[in-house]
Length: 555
Image (spheres, rainbow, N blue to C red):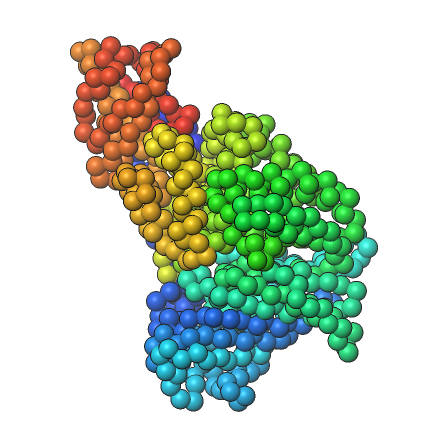
């Protein structure tokens, strides 16, 4: 949710020449071994085992800001090995690693932990080990923008605690294989809290157990694959109410967990937003991906996060983004931004998860775009297009949207609004709304409950659309600048070309003469006459910069 507010200019100026499209690129960052240990997907110490099941069992002491407990790793060996890596932040203590009831040796480097087993584990075998750990986890200073745990109090002075760790990593509070490429197939989350408090985590509440030490344990079963950063702890004096939604796969349970002082507000705000959101998302992206685990909204002491089947909500029961319209069009204050955006991640980020956070654009571009599709569903396509156009005010065009691979580093925050504008540009090029909807629904179906690379998503659009969008994706994702459409007039002719950092860039674009209908032209990287625009001039030529996020230079 790192969002910037620099407004780029769509140029309609005198000709500047080819250099106009060249923006300064950021200098390469220096990455450490710790970055590689955290971000690498290909080390044999990580790829040697495929996760099947976790049982995370944690006891929370809110007063001391202390956690202790264990995590059971159940896995299938993908090769013969005697050593593997899991992850836990260095400020948390690994007390023991148990294998077949006995301690096994381990070493630590940065936030990585390396376990050595007494004998080889054979390829194809299913096995397990348990990590016992304890300590004071990192306290988030400004969640959800930084990772850690949030410790605060509700209006009555009772403890209110939550986790938020996207980007930073789940190992900031629990031991795990902390990368997105290997999602665990299912898990049990057991959180023990002082009596009088409740924990709300992902999945369905299987059991509540009163313990002898003044604590209560809440067992939450997740029956579907889940990525690490989605695993959530929410502890407070929660009150519960529920509803249901008749969706594409039948009845979907809707469960709401809120603080006592928020019950009345929550009933009004959730009723106004959740079912319309689900109707829109299912129409555009296919069935909600977690019918088995249900849908929950949980009061959070931070703005919000897309925790799978337990979306964290902190927008203070108001429409907009903390009451503001990020698009500055008026459409963004007609609905609750956090409910719509964070729930959109159930399809993109949770259902479809990128293997490397360098490809986080798949999560954020499609989810930001889902906001505009929600506006379209509620108020019509022109409203949705206006909302997308208004989002441009937040784009910086500072760095490429795709980040460096293998070092746990995201790309530019433009993955949100520029990514949304890119998708709307692709929809406009395709010029077939029924097919566009089919592509979006097919994307969710093809990669259902899977981890993917960004390239797989690009390949899907190319194959299923029957058009090669590779150069368009390259320009918007791999370069900071916009493609520039250069137009000039010579001897009664209209000439056009694209100036782009992508070699041989060639995207169709819509143009018209004032008062006329838009038509597509197909400029390339070379100057060529646009015969459809014979007789045009600076005063009569109009380029569809409302739907195409491009620069235009006219001479």
